[in-house]
Image 1 (cartoon, rainbow, N blue to C red):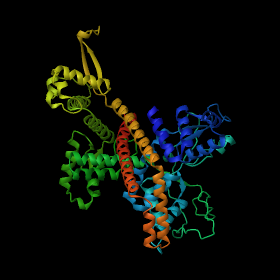
Image 2 (cartoon, helix red, strand yellow; image 1 turned 90 degrees about the vertical axis):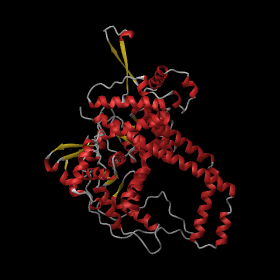
Image 3 (cartoon, rainbow, N blue to C red; image 1 turned 180 degrees about the horizontal axis):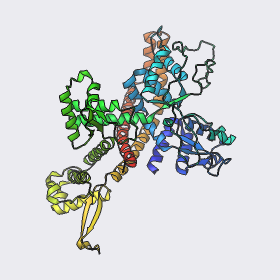
Amino acid sequence: MTAQEIRLCGLLLREHFGEVVEKVGKHLLRGGAQNLRCVGHEAGLSLDLVKKTLCVLVQHGACSFASGRKGPGSPTEYWACCDRILRILRYPRYIYTTKTLYGDTGELLIEELLQRGHMTMSSLVKTVADRLTQNMEDGRSVDYSEVSSIFSKLVETHFLQRCPPPPAAAAAADSGAQAAAPAAPGAPTAPSGAAAPSAESFADCYRVPHVTLVGRGKRQHAAEDGEEPRSAKRPRMDSQVHGDEGIYWQVNFERFHQHFRDQAIISAVANKLDQTSSEIVRTILRMSEVTTSASAACTKPLSANEIFRSLSASYNISRPILDQYLTLLVDDPMEFVGKAGESGGGMYIVNLHRALANLARATLESIVQERRFRGLRITWGFCLREERLAQTQRVAARAFIEPMRCLPRPGDVHVGLQDQFFKSMSPDELRKFETNIFYRLTFFLLQEIPKTPDFAPSRTFYLYTVNQLPTARMLLQNCYKTVANLIERRLFESRESKRLLEKSQRIEAILASLQASGAEPEQLTEVEEMITASEKQQLDVLRLHVNKLDSAENQVDETIFLLQSYINSTAVAPT
């Protein structure tokens, strides 16, 4: 775990849970597994506050716990999950994807689960139905069965899954540690030194229980004059039995990541070939989205007959045309689609790991093109092409940097540095300058090929090579640093305009209250004029800056996802 990851995790925890949770979370990330008293002592917080903080982290799956390393009876130890905390950055993408696939109901279901960590099906359905009813016109409401239907579809497509039940080892933990973080679904304990069980390891992971929910969503009414409103933090006690008590549900992040990966592959095929080819790849991925694991190197083989039957009639693709497109996809140098057999008109697969490697390579090329001048761009592209050719031939990746082959004319170099500086350099000097820049930035690696065993410099060839995996890891850390800087800048902008934002929120609340009570237009105009024209202009500029920063965070997160997926695929790639 790097310093940039810890910094970004701390910012995400502060933004979503507060400074106390950030302090405990960063302490666990830096110090590793620790018991309750050690966390409280080193973090300088009371035990009660540490217990509440750990409960929050455990509730959202950002912290795990297990029996102490000294054996049974030793204090329970806690450790933070860096990968789970970093997924907070992707929350808007999860919600937007669900809204696109399942509408407003699916969006609210995922949003509630992300906010609360895990919930029972009955509680989640009621909460979402009430929220949908609240936004409807008077006299209209949402039936519980409509929300339950969307919930079942999310489970059927594996976007939701049951929380794994806590193992029996949790019951043997000491009472003080259990008070700090009770054995809650979604954060199972594990024996010391063993990995926590995954949700997919349980047979009923995707089985929806029979829930008796009859009714419609209820609208929240404002409190009458003289009546004390119900405390928002007081839990509502539901005495009804719905049949799913003790069965909690959580978001299946791996399924969302699989969907994002498939969409990236489909988009790449559409840009490389055409829309029809991308629809064929989309059909193959859709047919195997549930049967293919997230870490699989390729999809399950599908025959051309199955693919043809599953294609939508709106595509208007005949069987001979489909065979031609499949042949084109198989022969494409990117090798997104491969052929695994001849039965059934041909068995076809999507090479997931190879597609991720190609997407990562395109991302690296794009980053170099954006940040460096043209000469470096051409040098990098040449080395990367040589490395790609070497990988295809199954030999070591190496590249000779030839002056006349990969360098532009000095007058063509005009981005970032002065032309006069390069005009004074010979092609050989310019080539050395460029390769040294890449070498110092660790984009290039140096490989020595000696003519004699003594490795004398005069009798040694020095070959440059591009190692894609270390470069991807380096750029991933740069992306973490970029996102952290964007979040800090956004928080700074909001902090500097805090008084103006609070004033705007108060006025908006007053206007909403007056509109609900049927106030006169003159009263509404009078309230709106409480904000001056200059303050409105400041608010517009602030919102524009914040929106740009939010958009930049989402765009960098897409790059983070591609690089992470590629790095993870190399860790599980078959040898």
